[in-house]
Length: 214
Picture 1 (tube, helix red, strand yellow):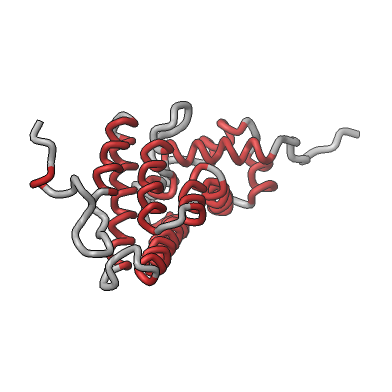
Picture 2 (spheres, rainbow, N blue to C red):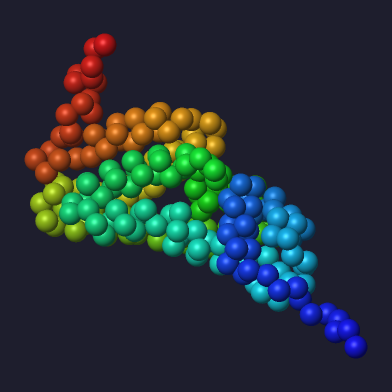
């Protein structure tokens, strides 16, 4: 006798990657269950059996994104010997990651909440928490840098951390708007020259007086 109601078997990891690209490209609100199942090549019962529901799937997507496409932030913070080197690298790599060919532009955790309504409060809160965690990680790195003498002792680590995230948001939106990688890399380099130095002031080239007259 033929069995009925069994979910179709499929590659769960491949389906998760497909869902990641869908949410990244269209945002949480604009990506329906029908869109997801069509892109993943599965039936709705298979999605619910494997992931629970759209909200649970999105939570897995955000986690997977952080381990893969978004891992450049963690690597920079742990691998660079100085706070300024780490944050400069974050911005330079953001410019490259946000414009990588063959996948959606910008950053999923920065862009996926666009257009969210009250019905998407859970997803919006998840993304907000991820962004807050990034700010906190930057702030910890900056405080450690100030304690090590890499930055002026009176550096406002909390504000500077938020500035870096704001720059990342700007790079992400510019990438969405079609800015070229080279343009965003130039923005990242300019931003890195604005970091405060241990003795006060900024890096050479950060002020109007030191700008190239050409």
